[in-house]
Amino acid sequence: MKKYFLKIYGCQMNVSDAERIFGWYEGKNWEKAKTEKEANEIVIVTCSVRQTAEDRVYGLVNNLGKLKKQRSNLKIILTGCMLRYPLKWLKEKMPMVDEFKKISDFTQKTKPIHQKKIQAFVPIMEGCNQFCSYCVVPYARGREKSRSFTEIICEIKELVKRGYLEITLLGQNVNSYGKDLKDKEHSFANLLTEIHKIENLKKISFLTSNPWDLTDEIITAISLPKVDRYLHLPVQSGDDDILKMMNRHYTVTDYLKLIDKIKKKIPNIKIGTDIIVGFPGETDKQFQNTLNLCKKVRFVKAYVSMYSPRLGTAAFKLDDNVSHQEKRLRWKIIDGLIN
Ligand code: SAH
Ligand code: SF4
Ligand code: F3S
Picture: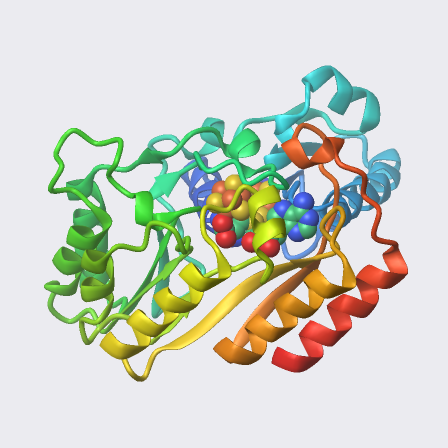
């Protein structure tokens, strides 16, 4: 029996995509290999969000290239967000890769094989229309495209029948769910409300919400009892000028007001966030503003990233002028405060 091995980088979207790739191979009757060494095909699900994520992929491909020299029948397939680069460039950069394959080549009409028994990821939309100036996701995953409302409900009902108790809805900006659908009733707030009615489902989580289009309707839906009391609300920076340069459509005051409103409606809610330190031009003072915001909000968790210039994004043309040493220092301070 032929064997495959998956190496997954990046966010939960990639984990969810990988679950469909598992389904694709199982559909062909392939078996999951325990290690790279016994696989006939190795699929690398890549992330492009920071340079370090890409560097890990280059490192792995190099090592697998050595393995390939011993085993000429080994096939290396690369998929995921790094396919945003021109194919010619990728081929030159990684000649040991046999095939560059779009995620959709695996995932269309494929049933996912969920990796856990109790909790399952359910993608509700693809892509992003926000174009934050530092971010590759809109280029890597295209424009926002919502899955059908009924399809999502059916998938979750099916999962619950199979014994799943918790689901995590996935999308780059779940607040936008349904904006591209014909039926205006098919909004994120209504989706949550409908899912909430499913009997025997115990917990609903979702990733990720943006701070600027989290409507009152959505907050009301989040207050329903089965919805997770952890809300991930990336702020990225606590300085208005940096937020503007990041193309994030809110000010610090807007963000704090929103948190207040959410906490009033759902008193036991816990808030987590994403923060970027060392965005081009970020001064000490502006960094202090971020620190102050963190002290005010008292996040329970933060994913802190050092700014990484990404080719193709709007911020790429800005001077990446905060030194690596300074970025590390700022990273340590915020991470130490929150995590
Ligand atoms: N859709 C989600 C997350 C997308 S990427 C959202 O909007 O919040 C995940 C996180 O990676 C971002 O929240 C950001 O903090 C970080 N990130 C994205 N691009 C980055 C870059 N160029 N440099 C450093 N961190 C980055
Ligand atoms: Fe990237 Fe911004 Fe879209 Fe999030 S909302 S995926 S940070 S462009
Ligand atoms: Fe996720 Fe990385 Fe792509 S964060 S959407 S896997 S660029």
